[in-house]
Length: 400
Ligand code: AMP
Ligand code: MG
Image (cartoon, rainbow, N blue to C red):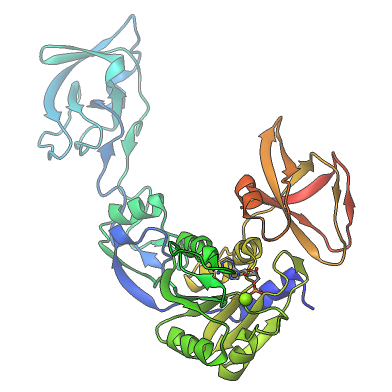
């Protein structure tokens, strides 16, 4: 049986990237660049003032101080968006606003707070160094320079940067499309009156939100009863437009757990079962180039396996280069006892205090206890060989 890290490696090695599509910058939030982006423009586009003040010649201000201000003649007022017409000559100044084009002749900007205007002249109360408060053309980005690398995630700063150099459309990896199928003859859609022995397809709501949170588009295949022909028909349908297919339930050792055998017929079963708890019966394969994930039906298992195994693959499909959530160490707040032999992902509540994270295990009645999941904000990763941990010990944790 595979360890978590072996299983994850196999999954990621089998995962490619979705094709590139051209999208409007406005709708690219959360997408990843499919190509490097070069800037055709320098940033700043032109020399401009970084402050509201006066564009002057530093040489004119030698010896200027609070007690000994130097008076200059104002020759022009330069608001942002205006093209200066006057050259600043010796003994002269131009009033200039932040972002306005810097005038010829001047070589520095004195901030308005260090000046006092008197009619057509201004008194300056300090000296200035050449180049101060000027944003030089191309100092942030030279024209032709690479702005962002392929794989870069479009977050707010990337979007704003691309807009700065006037990129209206960009090439990103298409959002992954994922077919989602719930299995089980006992499982019925939300909102129906429940008959004897029936349960609501609750996992769909958790997994659907997880899919959305990693930027996937969901193809809803609904619910299928535990029937070979029906399952096969749904899986074949689910292949049509999808990059990946996820089934929920039907991958354990029960007599009516048919999903694995059908995946094997339609494609290739790559592994079944991982040495982890919850989520041991995770199944992974490929059907006609599409990724296949069989999530266990137990609600906590489904959510945890998705985060650990499916999410990294979907991020990779989307072009992301970082696939895994960070882990860090936390101080255990209660003694822990569990069964060695598998990595355990225990639900915990993490809080930060006195420069440390503290992890308090959440009370749980097993992998059907969804309420324990709602009380948790993280997981503690307990190594295979460990059965006991003492309060105060350091443990490995991550946020959910
Ligand atoms: P299975 O993996 O099919 O053996 O199911 C394990 C447990 O999870 C059983 O108690 C199922 O009734 C339950 N289960 C399976 N699918 C779902 C679902 N979509 N929503 C909620 N519970 C489910
Ligand atoms: Mg089932």
